[in-house]
Image 1 (spheres, rainbow, N blue to C red):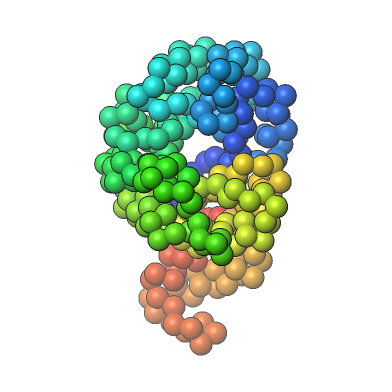
Image 2: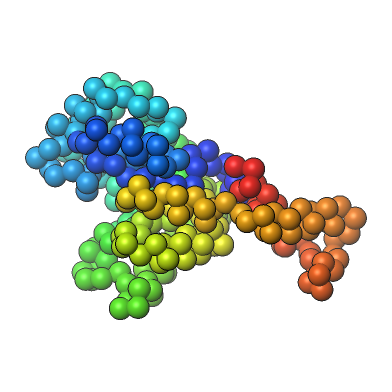
Length: 272
């Protein structure tokens, strides 16, 4: 994806689905580009053995599935990995990633590293260098818990400064290493306008996808990542204009190399 970021093949809308609810697997796949079958927060600890059985006994398309496993420091992680060996799934999301070695120890699985704690955010500069990294995602709520905080957002819905800093830190480290970055979930399912605005901001900032917690959110996210006809038309004019000149005017706007690169990003999203 882009001139510096590795191509991302899993689509723009990633939907979490509890792994202990196999009745929802196909419905989730019908709603989103990729489904994250969750063995961690979406499953009560007592039901994780049942969730692992469901994961094995109800296979779905492994090319469109990420399995979120428990943190590397837990006994549940070892059980999760043993379970995965009995499936066709080869991409995992590692909850509460805090060290590049945690990612590399998961080889041969491709890993989406979830940097969602204070340690994880600060370690993201090293985590993005892991040889088997598929992408990196940031998380707000576990981050606040790790800080001893009580809320990631202000009363008006905007993220607190520390959450915004974490988001920017993970995104910058990912881009610097050419790694796809995924934006975190939006918890207010009823606030469609808020989700759309946050997804639009994620696109404009350079995230390749956004995670969802409800099937209804997937279409909103997908629309945000799909450029409008007007955007595509502008991008095509920019790219065509750049073939004859490094700097030129288009509709009274000066176009140079950075804007040409942005135009190419728009066309890549349109093609995807």
